[in-house]
Length: 162
Image 1 (cartoon, rainbow, N blue to C red):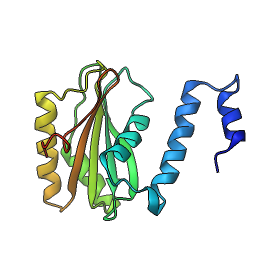
Image 2 (tube, rainbow, N blue to C red):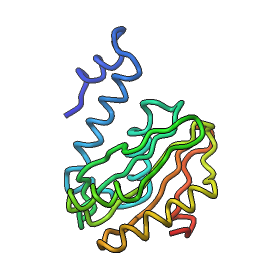
Image 3 (cartoon, one colour):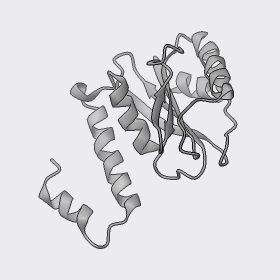
Image 4 (cartoon, rainbow, N blue to C red):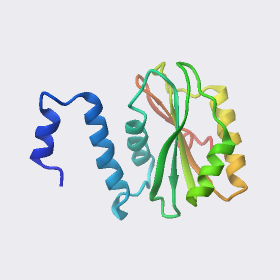
């Protein structure tokens, strides 16, 4: 499906980094919609969120990936934008969107422009607030991934923090 012609377009002189990121997102989203490419493990989720958050690494962005019961991606949306050191996140907005999309689960993610993926105290607090809000609607929080360019990705689920 993505053969030599695609590679030639990517490697051509007129293609910039943003075009490559956009094409990678299209490929990833196409795969996520096929049964053999549902988000079934942290590495699937990590690849998806890293690409979605790659557009503007100089500001903090909060991404929510909405999933159906089989963990097929319904939507991946950056709901909140911030500054170099934080973003205001509102659990009510996440819950409203989950209900509108009829989501069964979500994966939360945000980037740290500092490059350090270690979660802050406020990251732990907002994760708990979102979990509590979504629990009333039977929407599970599968993970919260903190993306830092220099230190990789911190997974709340893998660290036993969910």
